[in-house]
Image 1 (cartoon, rainbow, N blue to C red):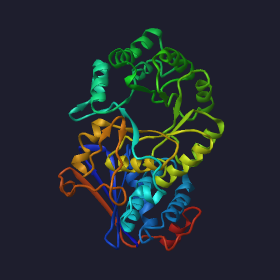
Image 2 (image 1 turned 180 degrees about the vertical axis):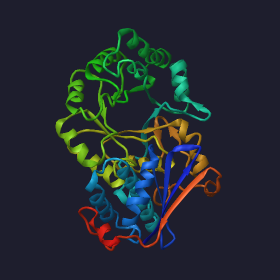
Image 3 (image 1 turned 180 degrees about the horizontal axis):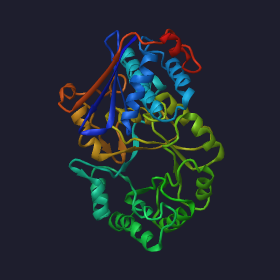
Length: 399
C-alpha cells in the first residue's frame, strides 16, 4: 500500500489546528493532526517529510518513522519537524486500522481499561466560556463541570503574577489573589472536584516553593510544568519539598528526552503529547519506559478530535495511565463541526471511540468551507528506498 499524497487542512476559525490526510493507492485515507505553531509544522511536513515518504509503504510505520527521524535528526529534530512527523505517524496508524478493520487499541495490543479518566482544562472557546468562568467564579464553574460528569479540573491562577518579575518573585498578596479560585472551588463543592494547577513553566524554584506551600492545605491533585523543562534538577528539588505531585513535561519530545528525566526521578508523574512527541508508537514507548520506573503518565490533549481519539485509544491501552487531559470547550463546540466524533463523559471518564483505526472521520462539508486552506504534496517523492543517516540522499537526487 503506497503513500500517494499528503494533504494538510487548516481553517481560519481554528488557527491552532493542522489536520493531515495521508492518501494511499488503495483509496484508504488516514487522518492525523498536530496543534500550535502550525506554520512551522506544515512547512516541515511538505518541505522535508513528504519527499521522504511519498511512494513508501504506508503500513511500515516503524520503518518510515525511523527513516524520517534519521533525516530530521541531522539538523536537530525536536520542534516543527517532530510535530509534523507526529501528525503523519498518527495518520499511518489510522490507515493500518482501516486496512485491517481493527480499532487502534487492538493494534496496540488491546485494552487495559474500558473508560478513560479525564480532567478538564478550563480553556474557553465559542459558547463554552470556561476560561472566563474560573476568573469570575471558579466555584460556579466547578458545579457546572460536575453536572457534566467531570470530576477534575485544571486552572492556572498564578500565571498573571509572573509577568512583573519574569517569574523571579511572587509577593504574598499575589499568592493570596491566586488562591481565590482554589478557595472558591473548595467552598462551593468541597472535595468533590479534583484541582490541578498549571504553572506554564513561568517561575523559578523559590517562587514555586512559596506557591506550593500556600496550595498544600487544599488537597491539590498536581502541579504541572512548574519550571521550564531545561531545569530538571531544580524541578526535582521542588518535588522533594512539597507534598503536591509534580507533572512534567509536555515540552519533552520523544523517548530520548524523557529518558534522563526518568533516570533522575525529576517528577512523580510524566506527561507527553502524541501529536507533538513523535506519535502513537512513541507515546507507547514513553509509557512503557515510565512504567519501568513506577511512574504514571498523563496524556496532554489540547488539540482537535483526531488527537482526542488517539489519546482515548492510547489511554485504553497504557497500563500506567494517570489521566488524559481534555477540553470541554473544544469537544462541545467544534469537534462535532469538523468530525463525526462527539466525546461523552460519565462519572469523570471519557468513552473510547469505536470503529476501525481512530474511529473518527471528518465531515464532508469541512472540505468545502470558504475558510479552508489546503495544501497537497503528491507524486513519487525523492527517496528511492530508505537510506538513513542525514539528508545526503536529497543532494544525490538533485544532482
